Image (cartoon, rainbow, N blue to C red):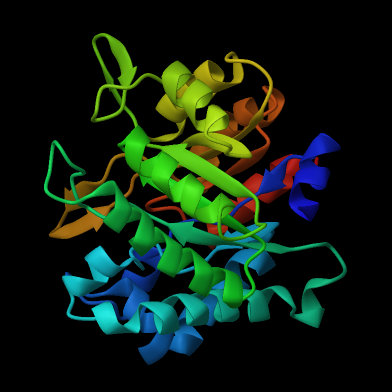
Length: 297
């Protein structure tokens, strides 16, 4: 688990930026299947990893957020899970080995998002079936050569824990588990009503190596959330911020926070000792380049 040794040396590592908005700008149709582009538009997906590495990312995530059986079945691609995830890993890994990037170590984390299913007894899908879906996806990512797994944008602690178990019981890879929060009058809660403190405690207890939060908020709110996580105690923390809340301008969806605007917030994350920082929806290689300059100061 080389990356954990790197974090133990108090390094702040830089993740990548958005996947969906990057691909939408390069041909992904509204309502299209981003993960299928690993097969149909491999050069675009590899180019995304290349762009983020060249901008300064220490690690990038694979294009596999919705690469589980349940999500892909909604696109009638449930038979291609192994190929989609293996390709996702191979494309990002090959970009990390580009000799033009220099000698700095670079890592690839396999992105694992929610299934979109409600687990029994709240829903109709069994925990056993959810586990099987995550296991299939994670094994394909591992076969493709990822250095770790990031379970992200989770609103259900139960589902996140199942994904952690599927990783730990079937691979030797380090695993990060990131949850998504809304800020209301009573503070930060996931959609299922869990606090940052509860997520921190229970995800580490479930054997996550890294915990944190991503998506849903711009850098100012994410800085507040990061402080809550950091105050929970010892443990590696990963924060990925949106470039603000999307707005519709002249018929287009725009994320309003520019690289310059986000700089102050990312400086706070670095100063408070967040171990891995990066971007989520709306962030671009230009955002990552700006954050890289802060880390390298």
